Image (cartoon, rainbow, N blue to C red; front, top):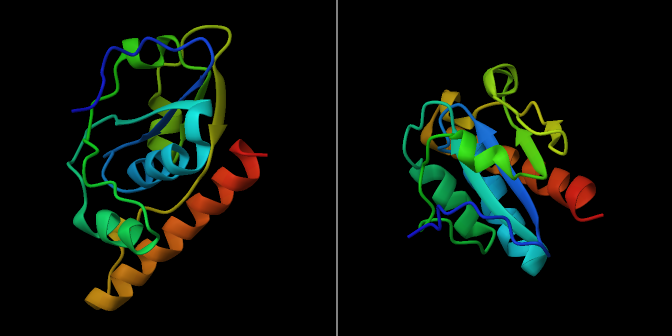
Amino acid sequence: MKDTSYNAKKDKEKVVFLCTGNSCRSQMAEGFLRYLGGDKFEVYSAGLSPAGMNPRAVEVMWEAGIDISHQTSDTLSRELIRDANLVVTLCGDARDNCPLSGQNVKHLHWPISDPARAEGTPEEITQKFREVRDKIHQRIVKELLK
């Protein structure tokens, strides 16, 4: 079960990934930073209107060697971001409606398309999820793990 106490540990940077549904992009970002960031980060994801975990997100992350099946689709709360050091929004709706609080909260916006809205054959849709996964991975490595 996910720790929802939201008490930032003093030696870790608290990062929250946010998108509307908390079903794909923010879940992949949470999984990557947890895996790649080691003990440097306290990582969460949330949504404005959580839609549940998308099975294709779990599948493509598994292909990358990361299991996100244990993560949950959670609603954004003020408590979650109250002590955050960084909030990363992954869609315009989240960027425009995120109730950032506190002077020390840094905000990044990564406008990455929602793979859950992809159309086409099952393979074409899965490929879109892979592309989004890879974009998120690149941004985490370049911007958060530098």
